[in-house]
Length: 216
Image (cartoon, rainbow, N blue to C red; front, side, top):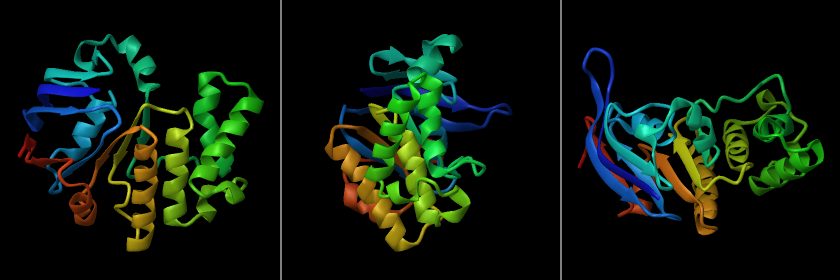
């Protein structure tokens, strides 16, 4: 499903955020990326999501080497991914339902089908009753669940998340972990970058640990 071989990401100035990393994630597996702040967790997630391009090495997802893809092909590859960002990137001038509808509208679904799927995604994360609310009216945990609903509404084969519980209390963080576990149980490949030690202990040994860009 996801195979990295000698993967390196070097930024201008020579800084290597990811250095010579190799690993394999099987389809349907749930894997955490752990490590200290600045270890390269976010960069690795962005590489898998094709937000960043590798400097060296190969990264094969669903049989395609992302390092060798033409830039014009990247948007089609990203359709297989759901991405949950640390800062959520919600649209605060739209309702919860409209936030979740956006990926479906981009994909060209009819309004009727898109609304049905968006409502199903909101129901999955426990927010169907808040579909008309704007994100500003939601708690931090609810905003993160809304971001997850938007990420999964296109039924991705790979769900990626970057520090999804960083700004949440312990109870809300636990709820988010259970949501990711639910998607994993139905066959979605889940990759989460986190510094949350309780997550890491729970998912051991399915943890990729980074230290200054290297896999340890």
